Figure 1 (cartoon, rainbow, N blue to C red):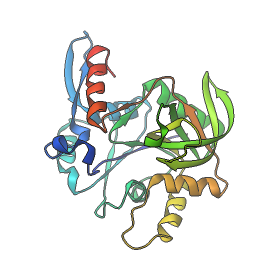
Figure 2: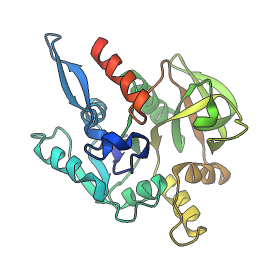
Figure 3: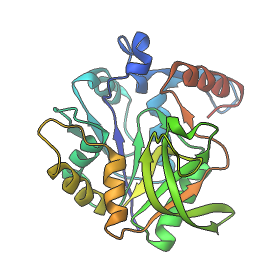
Figure 4: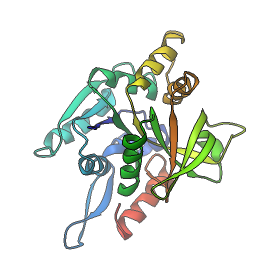
Length: 260
């Protein structure tokens, strides 16, 4: 099975506003190591693209907005790409789910979806893709146990199993920042999905008023309600995020000490 990649960029970056007025999140620098273990810096989006390249995801669709011009300029100057890039404009900026729905014009089959401010360890990407390929669910989510699930999108697990040493859960429901969380399993902003998610998002969008934002979690919940098979793979260590200042500082520390 050949999978494609999707990266959604162009968010408003309100939690990192003092920085993102100047530089969008995907271009924030972190440390990496060259072949002789010397440190150098590169933008965050390179880490995402390298994950995609390691998984042979091709092509990769980048959904961008009016806030993304610097990102597009960087991608254009990055040198000969090891995967094909397709660009899709999000002119409306009506929520993350709407941006994902716009990728439908470019995506031709199953895909790995990545927000522009999260990455997983490479082995966890691989495990999620292998679970998707081996068992054929409609979506694989990546989750990790957190102390305060009210700050995250959270799953309601329906069953528990194992896949290649990872805990895997059936998903009965998903909810964004719940006051009463159904579990402590928070979702990372990385997913493996079939194109069936596009139909679910379209149905939710059709039920909304003009100008209302569409969130991905709404599409996932609709997919579940329609009988979709959604699984969650529990990460062995937490994802890396640059979505908040404290997260970015931690990502700098991790990348400096051991790389990402």
